Length: 138
Image (cartoon, rainbow, N blue to C red; front, side):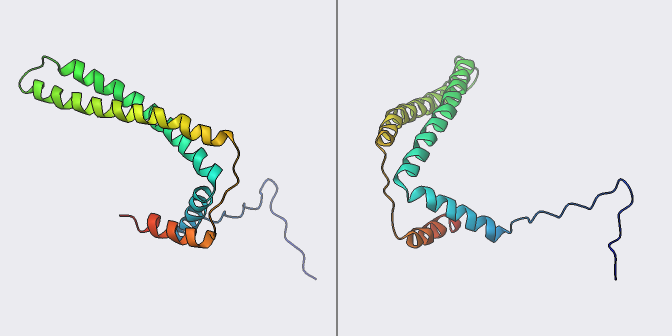
């Protein structure tokens, strides 16, 4: 009869190593998650509301820095006037983008006000599309 050997006092068995997902397993999990979100009316609306919010926060910061750069270079040496002109155009573009997202965010939020349990079927078709578009992207 064999007996298990005891570890010396104070030593514990090493914890089993956690399975690190392979790149293929990570890809499968990504595709499954995107497919789950993008095939559900509520999930996709919720996701894009949050994207608008995150983009607006980023744009607020970008606009602040853009304005600071314009302020610093206005009246500057050499070709500063050309730079300020381009920076003003860039600022105007960012401000238009900010206005567009500001208008879209409540429209998306309004879609969430009335619960909808619509889903795109069959899920396999959409999973294949997601895999093709996301994993084949350049």
